[in-house]
Image 1 (tube, helix red, strand yellow):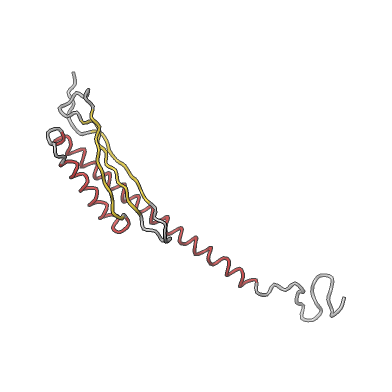
Image 2 (tube, one colour):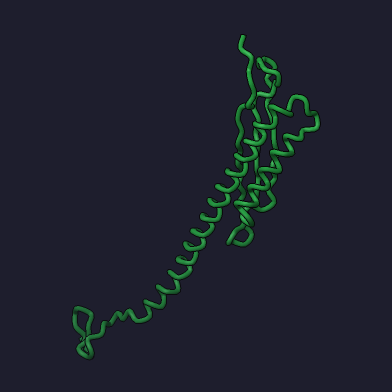
Length: 161
């Protein structure tokens, strides 16, 4: 052993290691910083998605509530579907009020199920409101989407035999 090197890897001058780890902190910083930023961006994206989905769910529930109420009174006699337009309008208004810019260009559709065997004046048994929308993304080139649905039975009196 020359220059004061010992078997444990240290030298007699200054106690520094022959396998010096100077610069390791800079390498760790260069590797870990992008990973931490990616984790932070994923967290923000997940929060944006969840908030938009919650707002869209509340919006379609409001639209379905409107559809259930109005279809019973207008649905059987109204051939133009104003109850469907009212449901879409209610859902879009609620989505914009709750979601703001988080629900991008919501596409709201309504539907219904006819039951000819239903013992009521109106043969519509179920109504449904669907919303499809894009969600803003923090990652360029990727646009997540949400699809939510709500509906239920028509609120109308049923004749019992």
